Image (cartoon, rainbow, N blue to C red; front, side, top):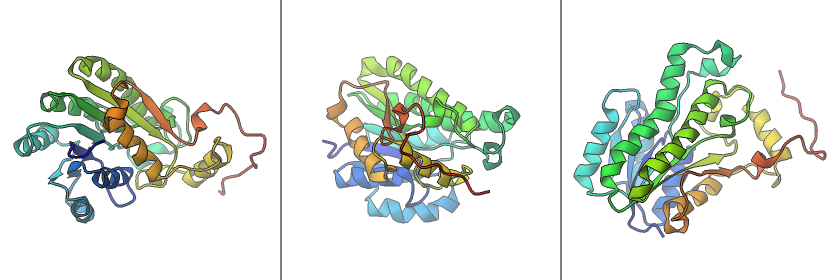
Length: 265
């Protein structure tokens, strides 16, 4: 389904990253990968992982730096004449800004969070377009906090909401070129990024107790859905936010059979 398809993965930080689970699944299914890392510190973690999936390119790309994405795509275009997919799994907020109230959000972190978490995907779409002459698939990651208020998520909820809106507009803009734009919205899962969210263990337990499938999701759940969106199985699907959350997004209130749980102070 995706054998010999070529694509870039943004957002691998370590071997617990959702993006790493996706990279492994793509490699197992014969995809050719280019992998990015944010900086020299993360290079030490990402390089061994890139080697495991026979990454054909390993490129530094810090979304906060001017022209970083342009440089990355120039290097990719020098290696490959076309791209089939891009995975965008990067987001940012100052950890301190995730605590307390959203109304107290700082302007500097707000702008930086929206730029890295949302606008970067729009910029990637624009840079990808010339390399997808035969069509392709752009896939990003969102979260339930984009549409519902979640504890200790604050500005990231705004950023993910903007990201989901941009998916629809990008899907419209790129549809004529047969470029599909979609998002996965995973349930809570332990990653480096999730460690910044206060009370995350409480969120995990709540989701497990109240989701229809009565379990938290795994990276394999997410990477399996990725195969669908990057292959011809989803050739008629664009502009979608696909929940991979054991069904939690359909729930309106606490399950009557779910135990009461209390976060330890």
